[in-house]
Length: 336
Image (tube, rainbow, N blue to C red; front, side, top):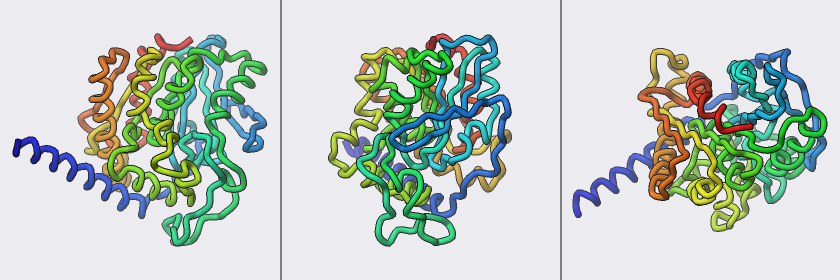
C-alpha cells in the first residue's frame, strides 16, 4: 500500500514539474521564423462567420479527389501560412503519395473550436515576451472563433463544390494544440474523418493543472482568454474537446488513430540546442498526456490505435515531420 502511494505521489510530482517547466518555457517562447512559401499550393478562400478565411490546398500527384488530409497547426498559428508549409515538406511528401493536402491558415490559440464569445485579454495578463499587452482586435477578438464549423461544414462543402475533393473519409493530423483538436474533430464528425493523428498533443486536458497551463499558453500565444473559449471548467464543452472523454466515441466510430510523443531528450538529428531546451518541457508534458490516453484506450480494448513514442525528441517540427513519414502506410490505408 505504501509503495502504491509512493508511486502515485511520484507520478503527481512528475506532472507538476512538467507543468512548471511548461509555464517557464512560455515566458521565453517566441514565434516561428520567416515563412517558406510553396508555389505549388493554391490559396483557397471561403466566406465564414469569421469572415474570409484562407486555406492552402495541395493536389495529389495522380489527380484523385478521394484521398484528403487536413493538417492542423499549433498555438502560434499565423495568418499568412500554416506551420506545416512554413517549417516542413509534408505537403510535398503527401502529394507525392497521392494524397490531397488541406492546410487551414490561422486559428492562433483556438484549439479549432467554436468559442463561446470573442476573446479579450484577461485583466492584468501579459501576452508576449516584450511585456506589452496584446491587441484587443484581430482574429478571434473582433469576432467569435468558429473553427469547428469552418472545418466540418463550410470548408469541406466548398472544397467539394469547387475542387471536387471528397468530404468523407478524410484524415486529420494535428501537432500540439492541433493534436487534441484532431481527435475531437474525428470523434464528433466520424463521416468526415476516418483517420486522426496526434503529434505531441495534449490528450488529457482535464488532468490536474492542465487548464491553468493551457490558459497561460493561450495568454502568451496572442493574448487569448480561455474563459472566452469555454466559459466554465465544469461546462460540458470542456469534455467536448477532451480526448479522454471522447475515447469511447473514437472507439465506436472505428477511427484509425496515431498517437506520438517523444521523451523530451534531444537527439543528434534534433533542433538547435536552444530550441531543444525550450521544447523539452512541452514534449515531456505531451508524453504524460499521451500515455494517459493510451491507458484509457487500452482499458476500452481499442485495436485501431498506433502508438509511437520515440526514445528521443522534443517539441519541434523535425520530429513531427518524421512522424508523418512514418505514419504514411497506416494513413494511406485509412482514407479515401
